[in-house]
Image (cartoon, rainbow, N blue to C red; front, top):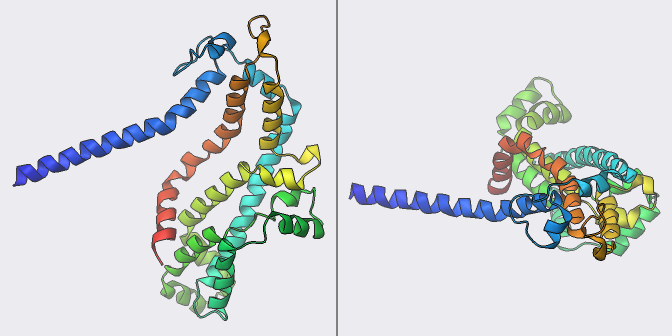
Length: 291
C-alpha cells in the first residue's frame, strides 16, 4: 500500500514537472525566436533559416532603432509616465481601498456598489475623450496619468488585503494617539508591502505598454511614449523595398526590425520583475483569495 502510494506520488511529480517544463518552453520560445531573428543576418531571415540561435549575427536592426533620436525621448517619457503614474495610481487605490475596507464607514456599501458598477458599465471612449478635453489636460503630461489612474479590480484586491489586517493593531495605534491617517501610513501600508508591490507591478506594466491613450490624447511629438515611437519605426521599416535585400548591405528586414523594436520595448520592464517576484505570488493570492 505504501509503495503504491509512493509510486503514484512520484508519477504525479514527474508528469507535473514535465508539463510545467513544456509549458515554460512554449512561452519562452517565442521570446528566444524574436531575439534570434533580430540578431540574424538579412539573408538568413529572408530564407527562414533562423529557429533557435542567431545566424549571420548583426546589429543592424538595433542600430536603426537607436539611431532614431526619438527613441531616447520616448524612453525618457515612458519612464516618467510609468514612475509618476504608478505612484499616483497606487496612492489613490490604497487610500480608497483602506477606506472601503472599514465596514463601519458611512455609506460603505453604496460607495462600494458605485465603484464596482464601473467594472461592468463605463462611459466609453468618446465620453472619456470629451471629459479629458473639458478638464484641460489634453496634449499634456497628465493626459497619460489621470484618465487611467484608477483600476477597480486592483482596488478590490487591495481592499481584501486591508480587510485582513487585525483590528487590534489599529486599535493599539489609536490608543497611542494616532489619527486615521497615522494608522494608514504607519501600520496599514508597512504591512501591505507585498500587495503594493504586486499591484504596483500591474500598474507599471500597464502604463509602460500603454499605446491607445497617447494616440487619443497626445499631439506633441515631444510627449510621445516609447510604444508609439517604436510603432512608427516599424511602419517605416516595413515599407522598405524587399528586393534590395541581397544587394544592399544596409538593408534591414522588416521582420527583424519588428522583433528588435519588441525587444527594445520589453526588456526594460522585464528587468523590474525579478526585484518584485518575492512579493508577487503572496500579494496576488492574499488580495484575491482572502476577504
